[in-house]
Image 1 (cartoon, rainbow, N blue to C red):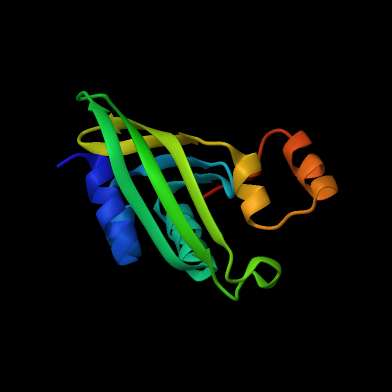
Image 2: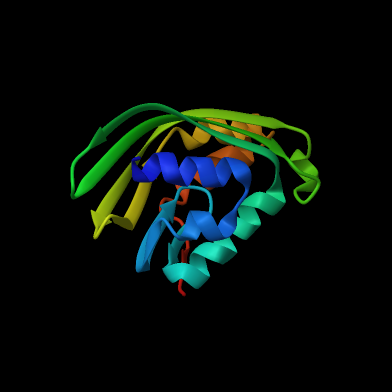
Length: 145
């Protein structure tokens, strides 16, 4: 079973501990919405927030390229926004993207993802001026362990 298969199965079950178990203790996770997170404690906070803000979440594996050191996955992601995000509650975000898992000792030591944030922000209901502001900021925040 690939890391993404383990990760997505745990994510779809909303099992934060099983998600975190896919990563090394010092792992970094670069999320295009939530920023950069480090270590197991940081990942628990990140995935806890994701589960709180997603009434329904679903990763679907489309394609995987894997080696002992690197795994790249093309995926489809679907989220129904929860009431924890009042301005977007009930909206559906559906994305296609790619994730890169750098592997060490069979676990992910660094994660990064690529998808069109503009499409996601439009689905969340951001108005055009806010969308321009958000997308022109560049990089996202970093969160330590």
